[in-house]
Structure formats: C-alpha cells, structure tokens
Length: 301
Image (cartoon, rainbow, N blue to C red; front, side):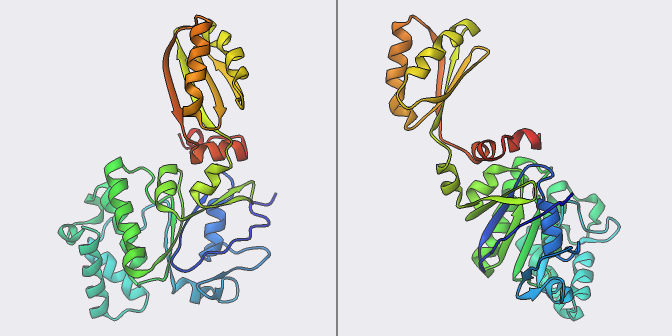
C-alpha cells in the first residue's frame, strides 16, 4: 500500500501554505519526506533549491522543522537549549547566544530564559519549539500541527508570532493543521490531500466557492415538524441536500439569506412552527465533507 502517490505541489517563496487532509491522508508522511526525515521510494523533490534525496544535508541547513511533539530537552535551561541548537547548526558561540536572546524576546520567552524546559507551560514549550526551528534563520519553516493541544489564547498567541515571521523576514511557511480556522485566516493557499493524492488546491475562498450554496438550518420543537418541513424545503427554487434529522431541517441553497423570507412564509402557511433559523456560509470543513465525505472537525475530535 502506498502512503503517498502522485503528489505534485509547488510553494512560492514567502507563501503561507496549509496542507490539509483527514487522518491517514499522507500529510505527515509528505512533510517528513520533504524535510529528509523519511526517504522517498520514488519521484523527486527540491526544497530550498536542493534535491532532498541527493543533497539532504543542504536541505536540513536551510529549513526549520517543528514536529507534533516537543523537541526540547526537559532537563535543559531554555536559553542553553537554544544556544546548543544554534551551535549544532554551525553558529559561533557568540552568534548563537545573540540569536537565542533575539528569539527569546520576540517569542515572549525572555523571562523564562533560565527556567528548565520541564517547568514551562504547554504554550511556552510550543513557542520554544518555534524558536528552536528558527535559531539558524531558515528561509523555509515546516510546521506539523503546531498548535495541537494548546488553549485558544496560546493558539492565538502562537499564530501572531508565526505570521509575524513572514511579515518581518519573508519566511516561507508550510504547515499542517486540524484547526480549520487557522488555515482559513492565516494561509494564503490551501492544498488538500486524501488517500495520498492531492485532490484540491486554491485560496480558502476559492475552495469554499466550490461548495454549492449556503447552509440553512431550521430548528423545530419536534421531529414530526421537521419531517413535514422537508417537502417545503425541497420546493424552494435551487434548494438541494434537504434533510431532516431529529427536530432539525437542513438544506443548501445559493444566497440563503434571500431565500429565508420565502421559506418562513411557506412554513407559516403550513402552520409549522419553527424555533430557530440560521444561515452559514460554506466553511473549509464543508469543503472537506464535499471532497472526502468526511468532516475534518469530527476526525480531529
């Protein structure tokens, strides 16, 4: 069985690209091959201008990689860990120290410089991971689920720093994430993989435009009312995917807000009382559902 097959992608310098897909789709495998951590059995890839199979050392020296697990030694002090990482990349001791201090300040870790890594919070450890990946000033940064396990405040804080890297240094960022709001707001381009193949690519808005129509959700007091409302939903011009589940009716229709008055009048005429009404624009999770038949949010949960 092939984990990844027929993957063909390009990333332009300075882009922020989100690489998304359901569990087992091939995201992390692709990332590990591009970062030289996993040898490819066929094909070719050039990262930062170098062939990953023919010249892996040159690739490693020009990229930063932040995996899903914390990469710092728990028994080291924060600043010492950064300096050691810089020395591994060939920086002189003075340069490694200076760079470590810069990153500690930028990532709001200066006050933790002399603390042991084991004593840091989850958000602080993740920011330290980012600092470790940036110690040698890479042109390209790979992030594999960078904010998994963080609370909303820590996630927002981390993303402020990540997007700031591109704004300040022009860093190219290639990431995987299960948080679709991150991909929607931070990424300029989204690439979707499933069963080891690229199945969609574009800006978040371009991908969402492929989902046909807004989602209209109508809440009723009882399942019988929702079942009766199916025929009314199906009669709306342009409505499709009309379904009743429990006491809720859902349907998709272009310009859902404009269709609401007609729907409400029809329900009133049929003496079907509704309790709530909502219209939502297509989301990236809707894109996943339409492309793969699976919800990325449900898989993540």
